Length: 552
Image (cartoon, rainbow, N blue to C red; front, top):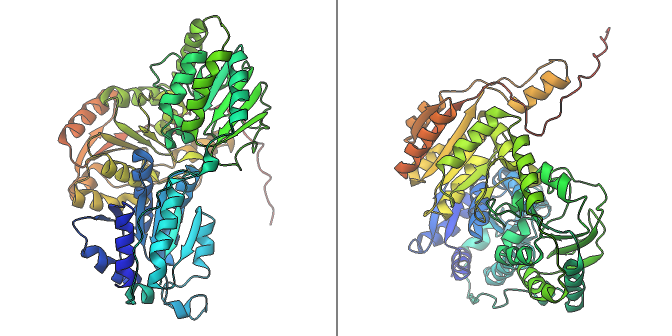
């Protein structure tokens, strides 16, 4: 078979069915081989390489499956790097499949089409592994190694590449079955340390569980919920850990108010599936952890990175939380009910959220209109910041997607398309500002072509609004490079074949959302936004002193 056939067959064997892709000459033999397997592969071809990678990330994080994308080398890879950095930050199992220049020209600097120096080295900074096959016979083992890395250890992107002459080369190739090992032995935490951690938690007066995105990656939400119930311990969820507990539960918390109330008073803290750093815990940051810290993580480099851990539980979060829930009972002390305390913290949280009424009203309109299992993809925009800070209740795991600590402007719409492809049985809503939405506006074409039933909400103030707010408040009104000229976005959507709606008020948004979701078809809602309302967590900014006048 050709190298292209070997690659397509190996992806098929590993269970990859959906490919987000943009073809090109270095990939012709691969796409020809994919054509032969059209009954197996669902190919969603986008209008920009950045979108293919974002879509793969959204697919992966919302389903727990591998999200795969295919792009040409050089500029195609470089266009995808913002999305790869987001997937890396959010521990997403994304497979990047890319081409190369002809094998004899690699790193020769002779100006071959799409040549960049040391492409695997470049991708190595954004992936768990970056590998190249130089003969068709090497391809099956390379794909199997990539699949094992994607499905074991800490989920993170993996990259594989094959030069075009190798994709076209014919050879006797032995295809390989998937690796039967789904978990490494090292992913089970040490038995003695588990017992020590269970004793500390059981004997604690005020235990606290801090749960991050690693809990969702490991599908460990039931185990964490059970441990929380046994200990009557609050669960403080990071932005990427939302949904570990339903926000309807008394012990479920997120945001700055809960962080400042719960962390300083805790005598034993279990941080599980989180690096327990600044972005993850919404402001707690580098402040010393007052209680005894037990850190459970599958990545040994994360344990103790931001705070020293008295007990380090290296292993899979599902196994670790399950073992702690089984063991803690024999150590568990009697504690007075904390119901009143928890209720008071929640009340203070919502009082803080009400401090920015415009964002609060729009976030509530979203929540009122969406089913419990609907998935919200929150962009870097005013309502998005409010949502990520805890202004939107999350009821089920994997139903809120963010860009994590990368804060990648423009990621939201394309990522949400991948979420919708991976979850055809759920409603998916993407919230964007006009600035971020225009990064991937061309994907309205992709959405219309494939009938992807995503509802996109664009809050439009014709500004890079958050930067404008900072310039106005902090830099004495010296605004620059923040005003935008936008088209009529609802009409633009209609021109692509996407249903367009307009809204101004929260009630308008509720009605438009209900109508759009009822369509079960591509839809966009343009919401008129007032200029740069403050963030819910923003403190009044003190203007900087006037700048000196330069006499040149």
